[in-house]
Length: 283
Image (cartoon, rainbow, N blue to C red; front, side, top):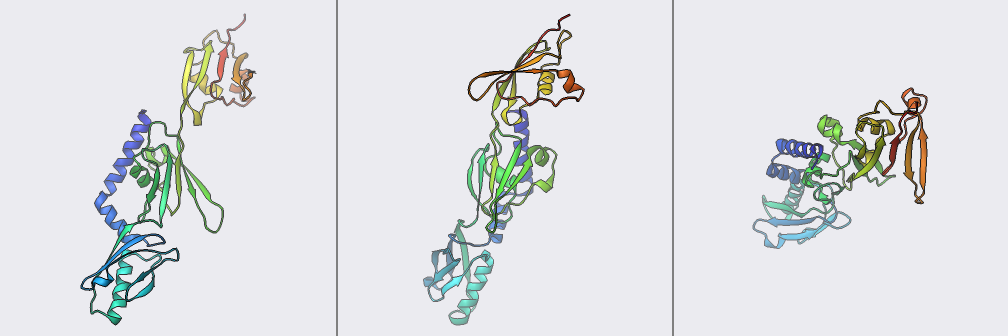
């Protein structure tokens, strides 16, 4: 595991572990969770066995119980439903009924995490959960994680929205504003950023293959700097980039690096497997 990935993952666990213990977090989340379609509820009433039922919330957000019939439960918390059932029973059947609701399966509100985490998949959205908490629940970042987190937010009344969060800003710089609360059906994607190669030969101080990240391939000037810079005999006016195009043909791009340094031309974005050759000065 790379040093950056190790520290990022460590910080995620420290932050989430410091703020919450798992037991307290689950208890608070269950209390705040708003019931929705497809949730499975276990309902028990002390002294009234026929009311003790395990029921699935319908697509319309309702359940059906003996004695009480059809009941609207959508968007109610566990405590609110317990009070509502108690009030309904007290009107007709029991004095001071003791009702307990247990949410056995959370189906209505989920979020999804994909990409470079230990355990990608769907997760229950219990109460207020943030991006960092979801990454922690999913086993943290793996070694080939990219530099950003992409949150795709589904909208019922319009197009989906994409939010991009730089991992370094969120975790290493500690910008709490970026640790956004998640919403139902959010998709959190941490792109896998595999290692690729750029090759630098000729008149540089450290010629050879450079390991770079595919999602963040450096420019020509950056690669030359990573190779130790030009040697004293380098011809900066005749740098050559060799590149294989999508049809398998070799391209040659001649570059006057002095023009780039002076700001007369833009730096060149390199691509995977590019070969940079710096020739010797001709006197």
